[in-house]
Length: 187
Image (cartoon, rainbow, N blue to C red; front, side, top):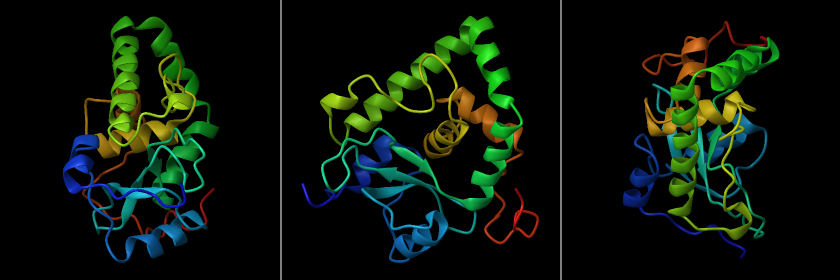
């Protein structure tokens, strides 16, 4: 495999409610956001209020054939920084405690895991990824970036831990943060 397959807009919408096809400027913007050329890009999972990519949709195999489990990849720098701060301040401990102590939350997290795999399998069912999703699902919360990207792409109610991560950092999808001076150089 040397090329990422093309994906129809209909399949993108089945994968994620907020998905859209790749626009002419998206690869350039993503290269700047990520600091590298995006690999396996098949669509945009969610956009900033201004229209820039916020989440990518990545094919389950990279162009060289390597299995890649991360379907939704958070790319918007301001949000990546906010989520990084939440992770580094120990917020994942509270998420994992809730999973351990709240059966409804745990069941919703497990459903999010199954839904993630089903969405990825719409692109390709990769044997090496069979029961793997992202972000620590279904047993724990390991990566808020993956869960927030998932939640942004699919919309509220599918990935409660991702929804909670977005709420924790005060993310507002109606506001553009691409040139947010408060985020520039913030660590």
